[in-house]
Length: 158
Ligand SMILES: [Fe+2]
Ligand SMILES: [Fe+2]
Image (cartoon, rainbow, N blue to C red; front, top):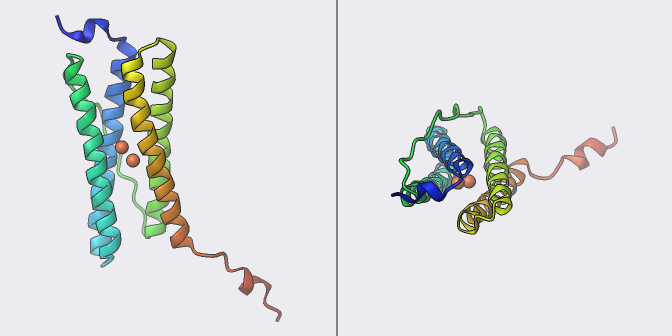
């Protein structure tokens, strides 16, 4: 008998949805790396490639967890890739994607806490902490792109 008999079906659903979101992030960051490369922005392309690898490692951890619970991974539909004509626009889209991952892992963690499934709780909490850190990184990168508000220009006397 596999361990799946002892796992709440909603935990399996959270894992399946998590896999879809992580693979969506892989697809999105991989696409953005190619876009940035096409724009000649090598630095941004490298950063997006690095993020692609991190999200791929998250997907890998989810697959391994599902296997250990005795279930076959089956991501459903991937999100459509969100693109934009500028790096700033891409980063705004990415803030939304990371927020979605954060909300998902927060909800999965709350549920595991409710049913006292401590093993899956720590699994989801670790991913939650990593996505929160991604969220902060994307926000900082976005702030760098936006630079200081043009206050001096706005206030210049005419
Ligand atoms: Fe992730
Ligand atoms: Fe992330």
